[in-house]
Amino acid sequence: MIGSGSSNTRDLAVERIVIVGGGTAGWMAAAALSRFLDNGRRQIHLVESDAIGTIGVGEATIPPILNFNRMLDINENDFLRETQGTIKLGIEFVNWGKQGDRYIHPFGFFGQELHGINFHQLWLREQGRSDPGYISDYCMSAVAAANGRFGRPSQTSRPPVSEMLYAFHFDASLYARYLRAQAERQRVRRHEGRIVQVHRDAESGDVSSVELESGQRIEGDLFIDCSGFRALLIGETLGVGYEDWSQWLPVDRAIPVPTTNIASPDPFTRCTAHTAGWQWRIPLQHRTGNGHVFCSAFMDDEEAERILMNNLEGEPFADRRVIRFTTGRRKQSWSHNVVALGLSSGFLEPLESTSIHLIQNGIQRLLALFPDRKISPLERDEYNRGMQDLYEDIRDFIVLHYKATQRDDTPFWRHVRDMSVPETLTRKLELWRLHGRVFREGAELFGLTSWVAVLLGQNIWPDNYDPIVDTLDEAKVAVALKDMRERYHQAAMALPSQEEFLRAAGAWA
Ligand code: FAD
Image: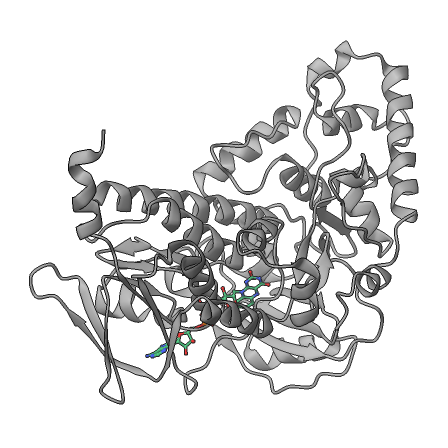
C-alpha cells in the first residue's frame, strides 16, 4: 500500500524542469516531457541561444523513431512533409570489406525461419549447393530499397510487405522546429539568451538555477543538459568525466555539405568508405545531405574536403565547416539533478545513425524512472547503467565495420583492421566464426539481421554453418529459398517508387 507515502510524493514532486539547449535533443525532450508530465502545475522551460546555434546535422534515423513519433501523436505524413523527409529502408555500405564491395544493412529480417532455425543458417548451407543469391535478396526492406520502392505496411498488410521496417531521413533543423511548435502548444516556455552562469546549491551541490546574459535567472528542480558538445551542466559545471573511445573509433572530424538533388531520392542512406574515413549521402525531398567523416591522424582537413568535393553528385550550396569530436560517452549521463541528453552525454560517429535514437532512449528511460526532488541514487544508477549498456552495444557494432575490413590500401585501414577491439566484440566475432551464430544480449539495439548483414557484407564467413541445419531436408530447403526469393522480388516490384508513395500520401512538400 502506498497510502502513507503518497502525500510525500506530491510534496516532493519535481515542479520546475529546465532544459538547457534547443537543438534536436532539447526540443525532443521538451515535446516528450510536456506531453507526458504536464499536470497543470509543472513548468517546463527551455533555454537556447541563437548566437550559439545548433550543430545542424543529423538527418538519418532508425526504426524506433516511429515509436517516438507515435508517442507524441505525430501524424507521419504531416511530419514527412514539414521536415522534407524521406523513407529510409537501410544503409548501403560501399568499399567497406574491400574496394568495390557493396552491401546493404537493411531494416527488418532475413527470410523466414524453418523449424525454428535461423534463415541465414539455411542460406549458409545453400552456398556451394545451389546459387541462393545475396542474403539481401531475402529481406523485404532490402529488395524494396534496391529498387527504389516503398509502401507503408499497415495492420492489414500480409507477409512479406508486413515484414518491411523503415525509418526516416529528415532535415534535423526542421524536425526541431516541428517539435518546438508542438512543445510550445504544450506550454513549454522558451527563453532565448546565452547562459553565462550556473548556480549550485551549497549543501547538495545540485544545480539550482541558470543565469542568462540579461541577468534573468531560471530556477529548476531538474535540469536536462542538451547544450551539445559543450556539456555546460554535466561537464563544465558538475565535472562528470568523459570516457574516450578513440582507440577503437579513431575518426574525429566531419565536414558536412548539402547538395542539390539530381534524381528522385533513394529510400536508403549510403556510406562510402574513403582512404581515412567515410562519406554519407542522405537523400531528402529538397536536397541531399552529404558529409565526410575522417581521422585527422591520417588525413588533413584540405584533403578531406577535396575528397568530399570530388565525390558529390549534385551542386554543393553551403559553406564548408569542420566539426571536431571525440568519440566516447559521459561517465554518468545523470549526475545530481542533471540528466544529459544528446551530444552532451556522448558521441558516436553517425555510421549507423544512432545519435537521435540515443536521445529518444534517454528520454523514454527518464520518463520510466522519473524522480521526485529527493532523487533516489538507485533510480539514477539504473538510468546510468542502462545508458552505458546502450552506448557500449552501439560502440561494438560500429567498431565491427572497421575491424571486419580486408582493406590494406592505406595506413588508416591497416590500423583499424589490426587494432585490438573491446572484449565484448572479440567474443561475438569468435562465436560467429565457429558456426555463424549471433547472440543478442540483453536489450541490445542491433539484432541478428544487423550483425549478419555487416559480417557477410564484409566477407567475414563462418568456418561452418550450424550443424542443426542438417536435420532439414536439402531439397525442401532449396525449394523454400527459391520461393521466398521470388516472393520478396514480386512484392517489392508491386510497390510504388518512394516519390510516388510520398506524393500519393500527401507527404511531399
Ligand atoms: P546541438 O544541436 O549542438 O544543440 C545545443 C543547444 O544548446 C543549442 O540550442 C545551443 O544554442 C544551446 N546552448 C549551448 N550552450 C549554451 C549556452 N551557454 N546558453 C544557452 N544555450 C546554449 N544523429 C543521427 O541520429 N543521425 C545522423 O545521421 C547524424 N549525423 C550526424 C553527423 C555529424 C557530423 C554529427 C556531428 C552529428 C550527427 N548526428 C546524427 C548527431 C546529431 O546531430 C545530434 O545528436 C543532434 O543534433 C543533437 O544535438 P544536440 O541537440 O545535443 O546539440
